[in-house]
Image (cartoon, rainbow, N blue to C red; front, side):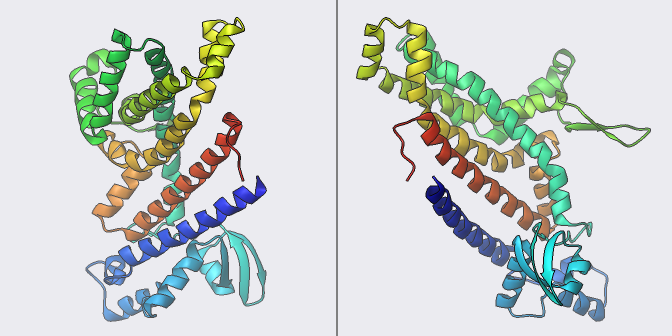
Length: 349
């Protein structure tokens, strides 16, 4: 188990380094970010100071190493840099300190705030939306898939398959517009839902945030449609294969009830492809939430990133891509570990 986790961690580290390289050279490797930071006003001296602060006066390969040192949790920084960037972590050494820190994603060009703080403030909204969408997909998709397999070739099976095809084919941004218009505008008086809204309300008197889940309903349903359709299809296909195997006939021969055989024995052995879909789609939901958040005005990493793209605020976009990639990798490692727990036939080497 430990060897397997170490191997996956090494592969993940290589993938993250590749993502860092891609992000850096895509958004900062070309052009001059100093102009974006400075804006339309500013003299040559101001531009020179900004270029020095962002290491833009260094060769590209050095700029990349400085960026890698900033975003990496393991770093080497001078005492002055630690204070200037307000780095948080554990540092040892003299003038040049070795440390383990919270990744420094630099500062927003527009607001001058730390990108890490901006994204961490938006992250709960994205996680809340992704978890709610996946819960809808799991709670509805697995039972529908099981019932469709048990009632093969019936109207229930046909309806489930037809609905799944529609759900898989429909893009999230299109469904988001339709659902927002119908349930958040046309039928708003009946549903009590709004076309847009956030996961918190702000108290007018104190300015404090209050959690509100009413606005989560429409974006969560929109985001959960495609994984719901895929989970239903995968559960149905896996169950049909499992129900034809010998151990199912043996279970019936031992006198076990149909409910126990289907939900305890058959479903457990059919869950591997479903777990693959759940974990894979949960990671993709973090990326797919970008458009859904923007359509419904949901305050999450997706909306923050789209707003940053409109303003050419590249540090926010770069930090968002890195955090999303890190979540994707962690979720996939957890999925591989879950395989061995759910299905004893899988051996983790």
